[in-house]
Image (cartoon, rainbow, N blue to C red; front, top):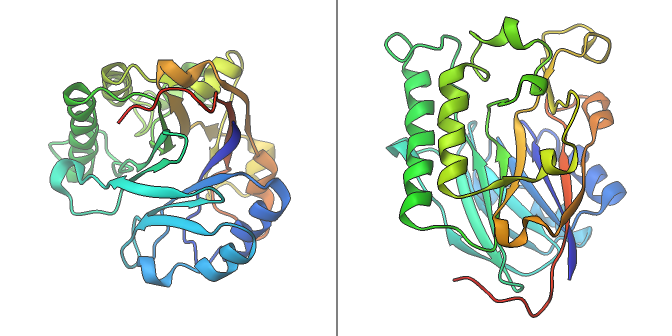
Length: 270
């Protein structure tokens, strides 16, 4: 069985309903994971997405902030919605498809502006969230699973436009990178995007503050696709749809894609 999955921080699913519909029509991923939906679940414009063939949705939402959703052509059932760091935020949803693959959709806290938990509570919350992710993966090792989302960290030197200049900027500080690496190692997750595209600068986010984001190209790779080792080798065709960042009234993130070719009779991990 082959399926294509995409992850996208949409920065308001209702405001950008048309952009979501355009992506679904033009790219036809089998599964689209959205973050920062900024909507209660009952206000997500599901009817338009159903008309495009996405009959299934699982989600967690809240008014004006956070929010995660998985839209799917394929049947999917919710298996968990974790509240890491006890924030009470809609930042995680996980579903399992009929092929036994579990998909985790995460929206990790951005962490505020100052990389110091003593003066910036949001930065402390981010680190605690990542620690809870690590502990959850240690407590129950994931298998036959995919993790996607806006993890709000660009871990590699070539995941940012200037490594040295961003070492003290939230999203690329050593302590954040270390916490993310600990969570990744705890679940033995494989960075599918970088397995496919091992070399070169690669970004999925460009700030609204830049008057010409494309020319300046001061991006960061904040959006990720990971997989457990038992299915990671089935992944291919990873790509960032950079042109989407240039659509009218865009999100500041671009979608990240990967395709998985899995054996239909592969063992299911429950």
